[in-house]
Amino acid sequence: MHQNQLFNWTRLKLAGWYSGVMGFILCLFGFAIYQVMARAHWYGLDQELEVVSGTLHDALEPNLSQPGAINPAVQALLPSLCVVNTDCTGLQAEELTQTNKQRHILGVVGQEAYYLRFLNPAGEVVAIIGNQPTYTSSQFSSQQTWQTLEDTDGNRYHQVSIPLKTKDSRFWGYMEVGRSLKEFDDHLYTLKWLLLVGLPFALFLVALASWWLAGLAMQPVYQSYNQIQQFTADAAHELRTPLAAIRATVESVLQTPELTEPEARTTLQIVERQNHRLSQLVQDLLLLSRMDMQKFRCKHQPCCINDLISDVIEEFAALAIAEAVSLEAEINQTGSLPELYVSGDEEQLYRLLANLVNNAIQYTGPGGVVKIKLKREEAFAVITVQDTGIGISTADQARIFDRFYRVHSDRSRATGGSGLGLSIAQAITNAHQGMIQVQSEVGKGSSFTVRLPLLTYKHGSLPH
Ligand code: ADP
Image (cartoon, rainbow, N blue to C red; front, side):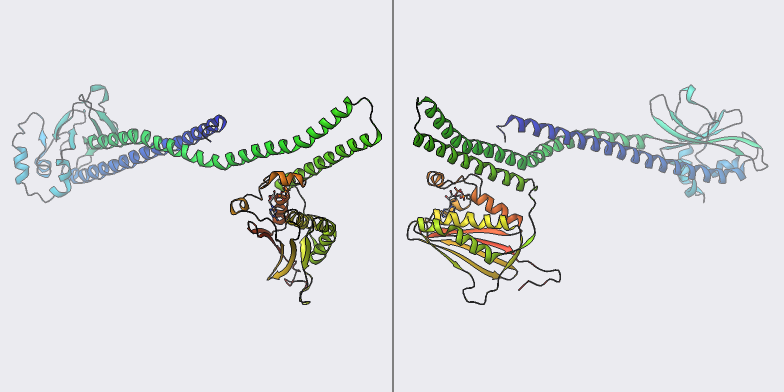
């Protein structure tokens, strides 16, 4: 296949398409994974902020009295709260020693990723917890509930802004709970790089696998392409011989100034013989190609194998005598074997047996014996054509059913054989759901066995 440019090119194109489609699916899948992970994380983040801000809101509101002012009760609740314009240096140490019972609820705001800010109704920061990021002014707006902000160092924060009321329901100001998105961004960054590096590597593997798979897929196509090439070459070769003979005969006759009647008759006989060979060859080829394309309509009539064998014996008796071969049949030998019927095409089944018997006579020397045996094995009729001829070597046995294959081409051609007889026999057997096998030993003879399923009637029983 490697030497054939057409197949190489097709394989490359096929591999390209495989890789393209698989690559597209992989990229789509990678993108989907990225999106799903990002959304799941983001959702988790939102939930966390919502819970924290809700808890703070519920804990703080009953302690607020003066709008915009941090009173001691709030300070007690949030010990690390740093009121703007006061010294907050000792707060961290104080927080560590605090044993406030609500610390476990509000402790989350003490985490490094979080910050908390209190703004008065005018939007001015009055107190903070944690590291307050410095936003670019255009991004700052305490009116929006949810915001994603970026500080001057490029770090992103997600923040929720909640309005607070005093215990007597006056507007106190805003509480902003924010969380750094560093962990989230780092996570997505790692995932992005993993996909960016992993995808080309996966694509490379896909390309290799595609090339290999394309090769596998092309294999049967290449084999049948080779078979067709071989078949065309063989067919052309077979057709050329009789055509050349006709042409040579006609040319020699045309060069003869005056033709006597016996000469003319001989010439016409040669042309007729070659013409017969040609038409026989064309008919065989047509039958085989029809069977290949499953266009051949095999009739399904009850055919009596016993009668078929008798007909073949009758037909080939003269040839057997001419070749000094004894042609025998072993049918109803014991007198107990009933007639066997198969469902099929009588003409084709006759042809199958005739091909086998003809070969057996042709390849058996004078004094040899050709036997046609028939027996029943369970639901099969088993026909064996056995001869004491030249035999076939084990290597050739594997090839004799190939089209145009001949073991002894000279001898075979001399007997009018084209190497299609056994191919046709096999095709007919297959069309009847049967099986053909050969057993042979060089110098001792050959035995061709055909197994055909016996005719069954609707209720499942055999006719006999
Ligand atoms: P052909 O028309 O040449 O006989 P077949 O397809 O019938 O072609 O047979 C293929 C080859 O198998 C023959 O050329 C012959 O060499 C071999 N062969 C077939 N039948 C026999 C046999 N009974 N004994 C020995 N050789 C056989």
